[in-house]
Amino acid sequence: MLNDLQKEIIELKEEKNAIILAHNYQKKKVQEIADFIGDSLELCQKASQIEDKDIVVFCGVDFMAETAHILNPNKKILIPNAEADCPMANMLSADQIREAKKQYPDAAVALYVNSTADAKAESDILVTSGNAKKVINTIDEDTVLFGPDTNLAKYTEQFTDKKIIPIPGDGHCFVHKMFTIEDIEKAREKYPDAQIIVHPECNKEVQDAADYVLSTGGMMKHVKENDGVFVLGTEVDMISRLELEVPDKEYYPLREDAVCGTMKLHTLKLIKECLENEEPEIKLSDELAEKCRKSVERMLEASK
Ligand code: 13P
Ligand code: SF4
Image: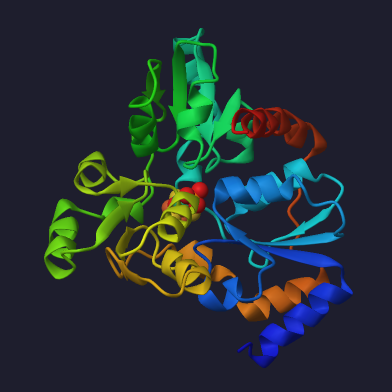
């Protein structure tokens, strides 16, 4: 049952002809009022198809809202809390990419969507954790500079003959770095029949010890198609999404403290205020958005 504030947001959203997009890591109360919930790839795909709405309220971290802006330069893209950023995205600067390009002039630059717009402007193509395996093999060059996530770079390397060079070399997600082999061993003892699924941002040894390595969208698909008990090695609110859409199965977090704080900055109060005031708005210069657009569109094409 929706509470009063949630109902007010839904009314306001209809009045303003707005759509609410939310990432899988949003709090349950936010997911409940969203029109569309998904992983980074699904949110990019959805953002490329918004034709009939005037306003997009993006409940995710800023690089995701920026992608929606890049694909919809004439629409108002709002982010309820402008402080919501991804610490990993800030680990790779445009200057670091330019330096790496000087060192490897024949390499292509494939960036994780979890990157800043300035970094994306230096890239040839983007990837998400849901499409990296597929997209990497559409690149012509034999050497690929890949950043900022080193774990995703190493994971992707298993599915291609290309030489992948992680940049900056130590980029990581502090949430997914928390998971250890001991967490997996404990989960196997506690839930002997469970399937353990982890995200490709986890360390290699954790990926190797798990049963499946999947993006958050991949996790959703997997639990829809399989029965059983599931232990999830990703941000805790992924379970809110699974419980909302596939409620008849059992889910446990691999760690209860795997929380991405900036994802949680979007409160119902801020969502309502942002719809009322039509701010904060995500804006990039036309020139920067144009430079990023080619890499986003190339990824969307490659992941078809
Ligand atoms: P997904 O694309 O799998 O949702 O991952 C995004 C992310 O930020 C993971 O930490
Ligand atoms: Fe960034 Fe990690 Fe949060 Fe995902 S979970 S938004 S990668 S800090």
